[in-house]
Length: 302
View 1: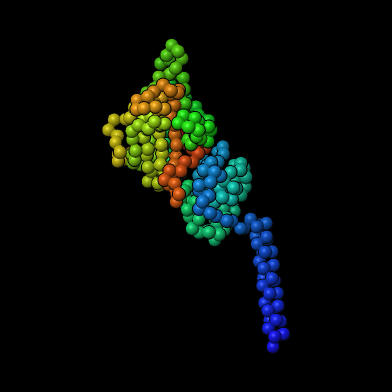
View 2 (view 1 turned 180 degrees about the vertical axis):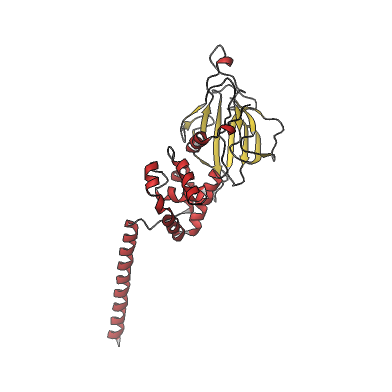
């Protein structure tokens, strides 16, 4: 009797080991063929996601693919960015693999429906409804300039990282001061998206700032303003392209401080997550996308 029980235990152990071996081989095969995708909602809070590394032309290509697939830009972005480790390859590679998109989408939904939905929603907050580059045209002024300064070091108020993109004023020959510094209040700052004014007023770091909450949930932050557009207040609805104020050099001190740095617009995009009320993402490639796709009629003259 004891011998029979021992034999049954050995059989069960053998079967268990065999099943584990088969499962491991299947898992290896699936990983080798790109089927296994592990999604974690915490990815939204990690640097890979927050970098928004769509690359040159990548976001525009995703917009084209979304239209072709009759799908939202946010879900298209989620599929492709997850597939390529949150760093898009060249447009040629994207186009070459476009036919695989439906399979990849189904794969990711099967892997973790909840997490895939959360990541898609995060891209939706950032991308849905963005229409206008945040600095409008102004007669007699040259183009603005900006670089990818995401997470560069800053020291005012203590050591910290730069969580946004600085759009610097261009040259304004007709308004040039004798010392070569161009005055604030010339470049119009406009809303990137439809939304609602959520915050206005002074911040020691941001100076005169305004924050717009889009209908998709993203928070769009415009700082160092010289002045606000008339009739704006917290709770005011705004449309994409609507004037918010003028580029300035306010901030880095008590209320009213100016002149601590060159005239520019600090532009930021923030998400709300399970652990952060305001989690910044890199706006650089989104700005490139907006500038490249800006329709002539949206380049408002102020």
